[in-house]
Image (cartoon, rainbow, N blue to C red):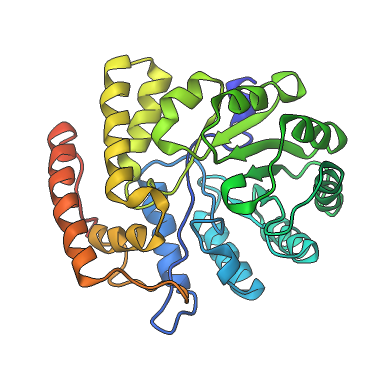
Length: 316
């Protein structure tokens, strides 16, 4: 896929945005807008809210619509916004997908059905129903995260869905199977966008033909990921090795996305928000966890600032 065509779809560093909440756990749209600005100003290439990192299943449809509208409006065309619309029922997915298209999103992503097993025929029909509910030139990304959603999108299923629905332009893959990753890049004869969820393997996955990463760690810390992508494109192998190491270090300190409270706590550190909340039943970090995170980030931020003197921990 050519660079010019690739940039019509998702590419580069696409943060999987957290959903920021008020004390009463309602969505904080002002904070969502501030996070949108923060990420764009740090040079990210696309935005991908309301997915796993955005606590999608814990939000109501109205909350998800309000967040989508706020991000699309705040981005104001500066970067493409792809709204994740996966939900518990097919009718909710279609409702969210149609809302995203009308709200001005660049496209959508939709995770497989979860909890209940589905067979290949059902998965093809599921995505076909979503695609048929939208204009045929509105980009749709499939989203495969089998370790959480239970259902796996084999390459054969992805190929069938993509051949059957011309608005399917790519897939987000959040599992560390390099052979499957390579197979995905060959869907539709290679005319297919693959965004990987393994941000700590960006150099490797782009080497396989992926267009970039949808990153959770890059929400509070976009700088090393943007620099890493730039180094990969420039072919600067020495910088790639160093920056991939920083990406891995930040991922480890932030617990690799296993608890979104670490991402939100880090956004407090960065000055994006003054405080944070998790959507119940999940909770904020304990005082001991906060203290340990602060100590680890103090050391890592100092190392990264020594490498990149333009890096500032706080944005205000």
